[in-house]
Image (cartoon, rainbow over all chains, first blue to last red; front, top):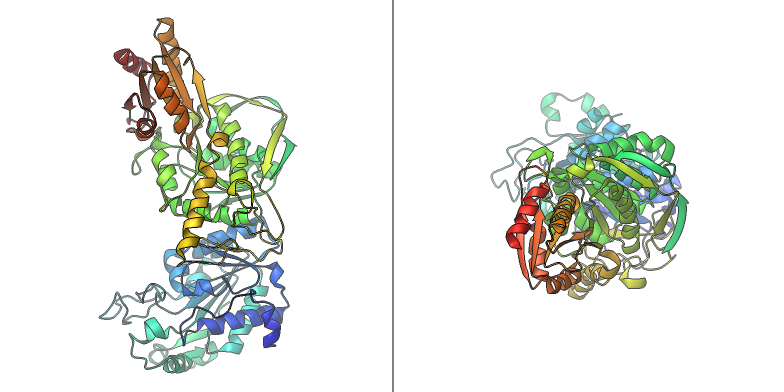
Length: 251
Length: 380
């Protein structure tokens, strides 16, 4: 199967730019596997991304049309392309800072209009590329380059936000749940209307080292322990849930 | 690049339109089939007309959540194959500037109509100004070029909008229609010819979309969905679109090319119009609505025997350096009336060797011909 995916990679592109232990490589792999599983040819795809580490997942790696845009604006760029040529299967892949902070308004309006886009938000809960500043997704208490005594603010629940704005499909998985995540990507791609997938992806370089994770493996381990399915969450009390991340489909 | 002739969407003949309506009709005549915008005075009639006409013309009308989304979706649609535009006024134009630079670097042809009002800030939203010309030229960071038009009549709001689309595709560059509130809301007759000549962006399968591969340094432009596996990025890129963000040669070559392709084509872009300049000792250089007042003043003073003429700038950017240089040799003085504090006068001073007198007015009103006449009499 791995060899089959090579045809979906741009010729001449070699190593990815991601740091050791970054979750984005896993996500990149799973996006290609989901496309393969759905039998969607790359010629039908348009990949749109903003600015940040996650925006480099499709550009330049994917062998299809790619549009690497301005910081925060991937969704409006994608909207224009999709509205003008509805035959383009348009997949936005970007980070949490890009989609939920500077681009937050575009995110909720595209969900409200139910534009036929699939949006994958690689959420590492920090600004990775710019050096580890607090994001609107950083948990309260997180140490970042701009909150050295701990982030005083609570984070967005992106799935609740997009769901409230009217998206057709909303789900959250972590890169530590590869099979469920791949299935989620496939379902998001196949759903008509606005589909949103939040993907938790560890950033050992910027998040991990400031928040007492000894190694990338420890970050992955922590993510595995904290992620629970909706069914598991239903059996937990508030106190137990406080430290958990609920994953699954919300629509 | 190919040239076609298509039938005008409006029936041929005389129409009575506002300037803003004429922009929308000109855009539709030019084959614009994607419009995205956000309401703002005094440009909103453009988007309303585009929304109304979508049924007959086809294409997409998108009311976006803000001006940033509007221009970004326009860029997306252009790469999907559309001729596309947005319209706005000062505050919205400010919001669009980052994307103008993106369009310049990615060589994305598009049209923005900026129907100028009195700024800065929210300023006087319903009043006229012409204070966005320097922003048109330098609004985004870095070095790039745009083409800008300064229409003085409703007829030109129609004609120059069509030309704006053609030049955008010919040079793969953002083109700005710098209207002013006074001409946006003016109603006049517009003569609509039966046919419209359209210049289309060049397509060549397999050609590098960002290289020095086309005539005049303008590379061919494919669209999404054509199997070209396009790499479009607003970061510094090589001829195939690969990011090259730490290569000094690639950056220098790219920035030079997107500037030189416009500057080297000045003779095919710059448009000026001479009125009564044959024996003039004093020339008025004016553009947009102010040129109407200036021509009125010039004609009246001519009757009194004063040797005064007018050079009207139909394009402001790239600047008519050569034309102004020659004018400066032919006359003793140049007067530049404008509805700002000397934005274009500064360019005239740079180009002309003679004395240049700026005459700015920023009170939210058009410059009355009497005020221009008074200045001319003072200088002659």
